Amino acid sequence: MPDNTPDSPADDTRLVPPPLAPAASAASATSAASEMTATATPPSATDGRSLTERAYDAIKHDIITLRLRPGETLNEAQLMQSTGLGRTPVHQAMHRLSLEGWVVILPRKGAMVAPVSLNDALEIIDVRMINETYCAALAARAATPDDLAAIEAVLARSQAAIAARDVAAMMRIDRDFHLAISRASRNQTLAELLRGLHERSLRFWFLALSTPSHLEGVYEEHLELFEALAAHDAERARQAIARHIEEFRTHILKAI
Image (cartoon, rainbow, N blue to C red; front, side, top):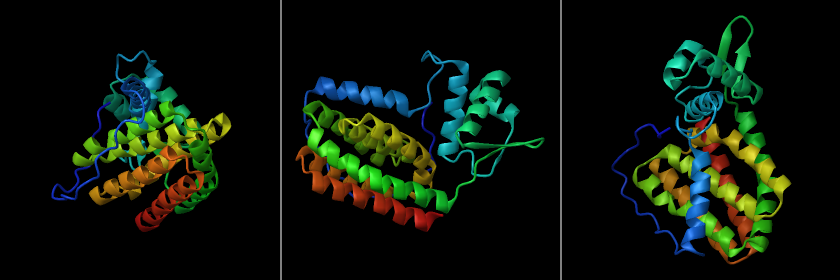
């Protein structure tokens, strides 16, 4: 599904640092970028997924990007129209979304988008701070040239997203960037934990980081972290990601 993000001011002309030169082969970087892009956006009708999976991804995408607002009542007929899918896949998708905490089912009243809570956001950030700083240190020690190429391939997508003021695209880049670092840590359990935390952070990301200056700031923080990883400097990587997460906390406190 293509990105449909809120319009952002078009008069911000601040310059963004250019992406770094590839750290490994172009083929490996392109392959990694394609893999992550495929999982970052709602699937199309021809991607081989089931109707239920397509409904789930489309509705979840609209929740994350705030097209469906926190606390908004959900109507299956309207969701059928917006997704272009039938009642059964939409109903099954709603059930899955409720199990994952994206939707609240109200007995005899229907369903609504789960509200957002400042306390929930801060708890997620605290858990990320503990686990993701450790993950970054592991990745700095263990990252191979292919890992660095995959991470840098994600970073290279930032320029187009920033130029277009595309908040949803930059949000997915942020997620993919962190997932690539998790893979480089060589700790599968930790990577799975962080994947769940990042998924839960996505709505807060969209709430807090929706201005052009924030998009550029995120890119600069990513670049600082990548340079630490490329230098295999575990302590520098730990500090860089701690600052990145702390900036997220600061913006969340202002937004909610």
